[in-house]
Length: 500
Image 1 (cartoon, helix red, strand yellow):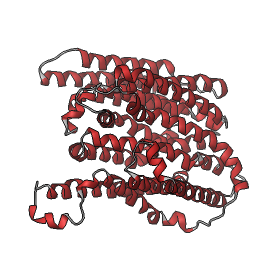
Image 2 (cartoon, rainbow, N blue to C red):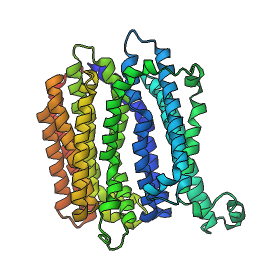
Image 3 (cartoon, rainbow, N blue to C red):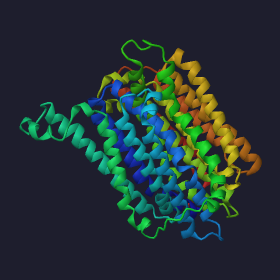
Image 4 (cartoon, rainbow, N blue to C red):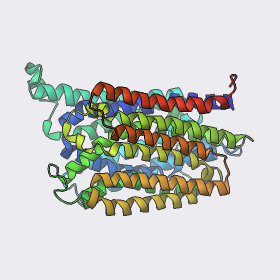
């Protein structure tokens, strides 16, 4: 078990380089530049449009990434033939979907209430196709355990995106508005149009993603286009419940932005419009993404790892051990960020966003339970009962929609945060109960629950014990973090021999 754990930790770290560093740089980009250039109103436009992109991403990939993992592990399957046919199908459908969006772009723009943003929507449609087409080569890299190459390509994409954002929104923006180097304004004016505003974000994303195709030339080099619908039928049968589950997941993750636009009463926040409130919510959500970083890094390595270990006789014990330490790490992230929120908020350059910081601890805890759900969900993927995952996800989506509709008019975006927590907690509980019936795994539920309760109590202590002096307050917060780590050390150390 020790070597297996080391392998998973190593792969998680490699995938985490791209996932964590990438998202961290994007967060810093928002905190350092976007929160200064774009107020909550404009940032609300970005959040709303990318919410729709999240739903379409699921449609474009159709659950075929996971189906590719599942079928590639079957002895009778020719790997290269499988890869060719899956990628061919994705290329065909992605280009078809994007063509449909471009043909019907005007009515689509009207329906989603962005009637003047057809150009941005066109760019997003192309981005969707490129993302889907490159998803299968990236899945192949994961399956072949080429974590370093996977991370390197992702990092290249990230640095291109970050560099272009810095160039346009700091260098060009600063020169154009006379903040520095005013003599260069005539030159910058030829390449920088301030009126484009958030449009540069979509254009940069498009160019950076297109550059991934030549970067993946080795994965495309041996590819032969072969559209075989008969061959794809079992993969689609396996993948479509995952696609439906993905739609439900997007409802849980992104629908709150759309529902805030619909159900937040006018003047609920005296100093904010409805789109401004969405911008504040989306901006503060960035701080909660520290949890998502850990969850995402684990998911990249975890899914192929779980499939590869499923045939081992001690796999249930391995899965239980992985779950416990995953929760311990995420619980500490929840604790550390929540009790030091007054320091993390300084990353945001526009104080107008500060009014939404109360959602951060709730969303951190919500994303922790989402990570627990991802761990638990391996049972229905291994037993080919993916339809049960669909039912769980739809139940979570129903909770999300109902609670958002009920709570937004009363609590504003705080209601959306509580709805997210209720959704992911309910999904994790349902997945655990059903999993113990069909694929029993000895998860240490008592220990996990105990650690979570302690962390929540420590966060409440940090939030509600008033300490006026900032030095003593920070010291108190460090003591709380150290107390949790000491508790883990005292409880867990006796369970492992010195050799382990």
